[in-house]
Length: 32
Length: 444
Image (cartoon, one colour):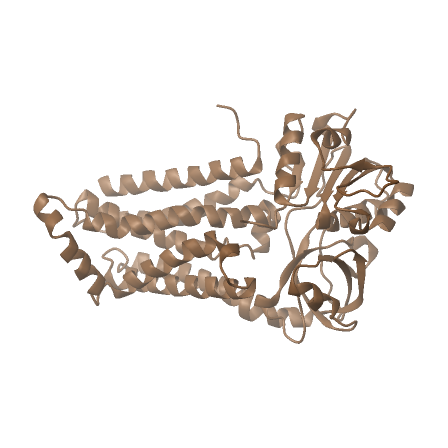
């Protein structure tokens, strides 16, 4: 995958990473 | 990365920490009474509340964040995370309602009615309705028949009411939120959210009164463009870097709902006076022209990341479209006052000659810097010698032709589509993303 260059693309990636981490933590919390 | 600036991705770490904190505290609490779906529902509610309270910090008026990430990036983050937040908010009741059998499915309407009318869940339902109203309100701001000031006030009041109702709902009904650790976390986060609103709307207006400015000059700088020069009314002066912007309001009170963001067209090296270039828009234009010399101006700032910083780039390429010339004039004045030895290029697009403002400054710079300019007029006069039409890719590249793209610092200010188009051309030409600086003032 090529690195996102434009600022908007980088920001969207950062937001997706944030949400993925939060959802993963949420699932781990429910399954604990 | 430019010196004096933290990488923006570092700012998501505290966001993640606070987002995860309620889950960690809940997981550390004793006992677990629900099914997986029930725990998912509770967890989604906890994450949603933490995200909601953090929305108050990312609403664009935090100077510490905007200096590193840029006000526009912070606000865009605020917009994008609102969707994730709302998804979590919706998951919270939906997962609780999820039927486990056909029999339960049949009871769903009755359960929904019960949820809607339950006194115990009332604050939660209120929060849900308020948040559901906030999302379209944010999405379609310019399409709503609301003046910006009114939109901002209602957005803030609704968000505040949603946050208070949500915290009440969590603390009054939540099994985990009733524990001392989580209750303290909600109290602290709630106070931080409330504190940031109180700071902007109550404390800051008082502070701004002590560092007020006075209108020294109010003149027509070009067709539909006014220049306002402000001088300090007190000893305290704004400490800023050329290219940054400020929120300004005029009159007797620094009422934050009346302020507007303006780029500074001045350089701090030239003294304490601030120059603002303001484009006329609707009723606001006549209001601007009517501001008398001597009127008090309240200046909140500086904000934003549109600044030279301590960049070691050998070439500075400046791209301005329309009123986007304002911060670029500040940068040019800064480079001139610092007797900068670097190569400076300017591409400046405007509709016509009357809208090409700051030519006296630009032509003054021409005599003292290694400088080349390219004026691009959409509607040029018959005897026009410069470029005509829009700022095309070839005009963009002409400014950095013959220079190593890695050594170019490119600063762009103008309408959003123009900035993004220039950004794409520069990226394709090999200019590193960190060397392309722009700040958006439109978010729709």
